[in-house]
Image (cartoon, rainbow, N blue to C red; front, side, top):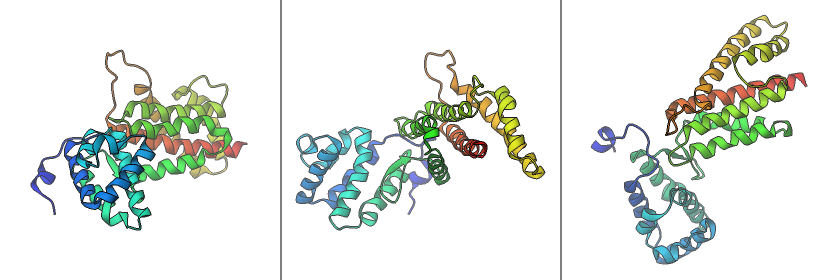
Length: 271
C-alpha cells in the first residue's frame, strides 16, 4: 500500500545511496537471522567480501549497513540471498521481495534481478539489448570492442553513475569496430560514415530496394548518433566534468549497442 511519502516526496532523480534504505535493510536482516544464523552469515560475508563484519560490527546489522561501502552494501544483497538459498530457504519471499520494495520506495538507482544481483536502474529492454550485444561480440575479431563495451556496466554502477564515461565506452566500442571494418578510416565521424559505411550498405542490400531505402534512413540516424556522441567524447574546457543526464546516456548506450550489432552483421556478410 502506498503512503504519502511514496506518492509525493520523491527526489527528482534516483539516489545512489540512502541512509534510510540502509536502516530498513538492516531491520529485515535482523529479523531473518537469529544469533547462530547471523554468525554464519557474518563468516560468509567475511569470506566473500574480504571484510570482517564479525570484528567490526559484532553481528550488528544496523552498524554494518550504516558503515559499509556502497559496493559491500550492494554485494551483501546478493550474498545474503545465496546464503539463505544454501540454508534451504526461499530467498525470493524472505529477502528479495522486501529488498526490492525498499529499493523502490527509497528511490534507489538500482534494480534487483531474480538472482538477487543488483544492477543500475535502467529498463529491462536496456539489459536485454546489452546482453544481445555482448553475445554478438564474442568472436575474437571483436575482442577490442567487447572490452570497451563491457566497461559500460562498471561506469553505470559507479557511485554516482558515470554517464559520460559510459557513453564514451559505447562510442569507443563502435569506433573500434568501424575502424576494424575500414582500416583506412582515421576516425569515426559523419564524413567517415558517408565515405566508408555508405558504400558497404549499398553492397550489402543490393537488389533489395525496400531494404536499401530503410537502411539508408538508419544510416542517417547513425550519423546523428555519432555527431551527438562527439558532444561528450571530447573535454569541454571546464573545471568539473560535464555529465550528461543519465536517461540521455542510457538512450545513447542503447542506440550504440544496436548500431554495434548492425555493424557486426554487415561485417560478417563481407568476410
